[in-house]
Image 1 (cartoon, rainbow, N blue to C red):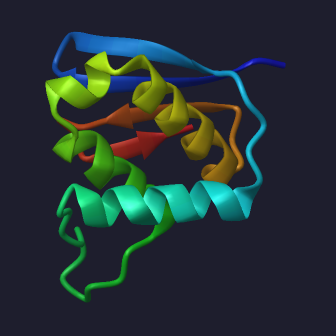
Image 2 (cartoon, rainbow, N blue to C red; image 1 turned 45 degrees about the vertical axis):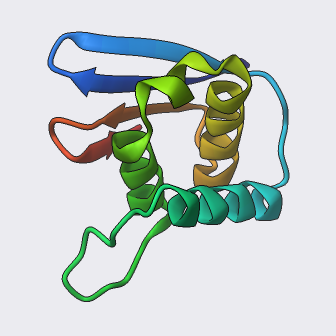
Length: 101
């Protein structure tokens, strides 16, 4: 089964990424943690608790066009997202601030 990540940047502006590499969950979470820090993301919850889905959403929202244009970075995002969330199909809906499975 193929794994996909759809990222909706704005209403009607979305693209789909094919996850091409099975990544261990720990490695995926570490990559997401590093991107969260590198992109200077903020916790979405007032408590400061950051769930893995929140990290994915924050990273997608803070990634610049340069990140999305970089096929290696976008591919790594897709691989890490499906591995960390343990779901074969993930939609990252930035306008709605939601992750959908």
